[in-house]
Image (cartoon, rainbow, N blue to C red; front, side):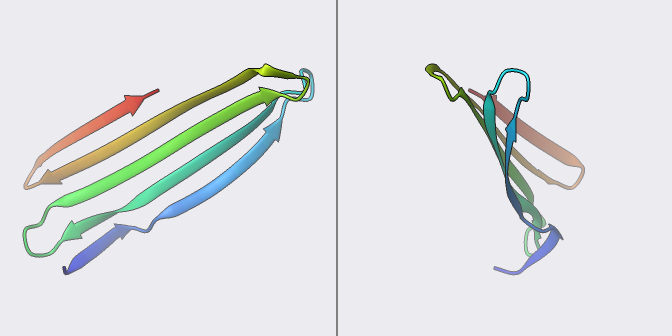
Length: 85
């Protein structure tokens, strides 16, 4: 498959702590890049994000949310889907 890379993939993790409440959060970003297939010119773009939060003294405070995004397009049209959980 012959592709043209429009945006390279990005991956990072960040841990933060709320100084007032003591709650810790792990944030993850996975951007899978944006490419164009040179044969049929389909553009593909995808990303996933996740957040996990917890207070160290309260295991029942654990909370998680995610976001997924997929985008495809060609010749002036684009479709984008996003889901959250």
